[in-house]
Length: 212
Image 1 (cartoon, rainbow, N blue to C red):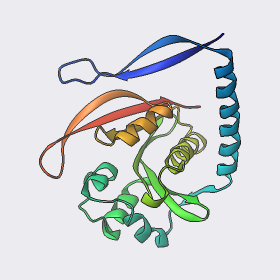
Image 2: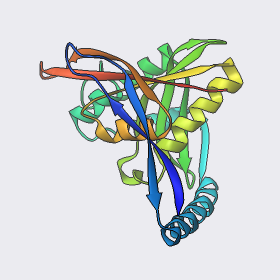
Image 3: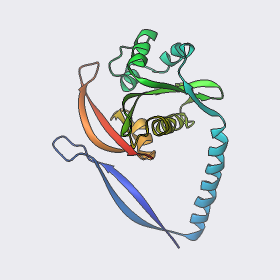
Image 4: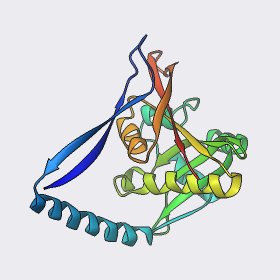
């Protein structure tokens, strides 16, 4: 019998209640044969990830990328999650204005095709970088594009700005982003209530991660 320690993260964010992430460790007992099966699948996953890495690339955004990126948000909600102050549909003027006021606007390439976009909306050299405007081509979601993009922004923050911490935020209704950032090691540290475009309430989850 093998023993596995699973770290289960739970988010506490009820109005008037505690904020942040609670974590607990749980010891799980699994049969030896099952563990061998899990191990073999993990090794296959490693091989798949190395293969996929050859398909990805990162570079600075270029003028020809702008209309492509503008087509990524599929509806007003997705645009709000990516770029809360923008009006749907996203156009070149709004995106260029964001790029001009932010730093290191970057695209991820998948087989040479622009597949995602992100930038830093706040940078404090030697301390932290805040990642924003994250969006992925809807036709290429579920292929690891977002994970590669965020990881690439982390490496850029460390190499260019000697960042010790990365912050990233997402709205609670964007469940896939919450799940992704949690898997990448980000933990919630604050909540902010905002008004959405329809006048309703939107809960912004602020997350952070130590890097080196």
